[in-house]
Length: 463
Image (cartoon, rainbow, N blue to C red; front, side, top):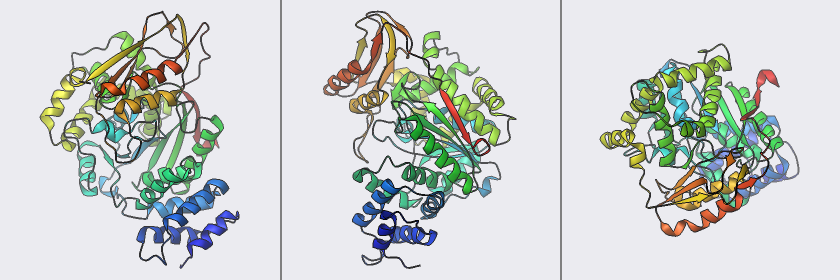
């Protein structure tokens, strides 16, 4: 089908429904870029993005856009694995490191997880940036090697290849410069096209809501969850979404290596093969990370037939972490993906010692009371400005920048008690994040209302 980009733009601008043929032809021409007369220009593509942002998409249009993006390049074929494939995806949070714990848990249960992850974006962290602080760790894998690693240890954690869903790469770069990043329809197409390109049997989504989420309003997060679940199910992939709270950093740490450190310490704390025990206080500060890990993994294990219910799946996930089998799968994956295994092993042997920021600074409470609130997005930007994140795609990030939280929302705080420790590799980067954190961490006389970590579950049979 031959299309004229301006016709597609005008149709959507005027509130008309785009046909499957129009959408697929537009995306094919965008990726092919054969000639200026046949291919949409950046200006025309940006105009269509804004029209979608303003007008939205009906389910049929969204499904067509997602499928057109999914098949805009090569796709991963999991058939040789001869196993049920399941993955999870988070819409982005501060301190969100559940993937690092979940993928090896899923592999230890006998399922396969072809995990294609992303980098830091705005105030949120990225799994690839965290993994690349492991010495020699490779996240750019050709699909044949990606498949081979999954066959050997049950999962692999890698980035999007240049030929996998290239339409998303083009569209995302333009969304970032046209004020259309927040569109739930474009977010859905971006996320689901990449996940569906992995040929998954099932997908569990962690849709964040609260002050640290892209979708801070609950009703916006609900809409996004329903759009993604419907899109996944229409494509033949069992899809479940959990709406989860992102009003404070998840776990103890937010940054890059420090989040790997937290996971390694949890692996070692629970594994019977390691004489390592976290203090009760450190374990308490990581409890929300564990609870969310078990909840997400529980749904994945249930969808994959390894548990009768999500609750039973969560119990199985806790067992696979506690018996050390998940950690063994994680170590096998690192062995297969690291070009410097001795250095990686040394880092895991002493994760706290491997963490060597140039400077640290500790923030203490100036009064007693309860830690009652924070703008978690501002906390995320503080982490980013310490050097852990990037302002523009492609910028380098600091391995050792980040923060350690010493308190959780609702904790009783004494005057002079440590609240946060800041880490950076540049002393000049400490002052602004310190000011941001002091401004946003609120201590009041009364404790805050408790908000559940998992607020709602969206699934096809519950809609």
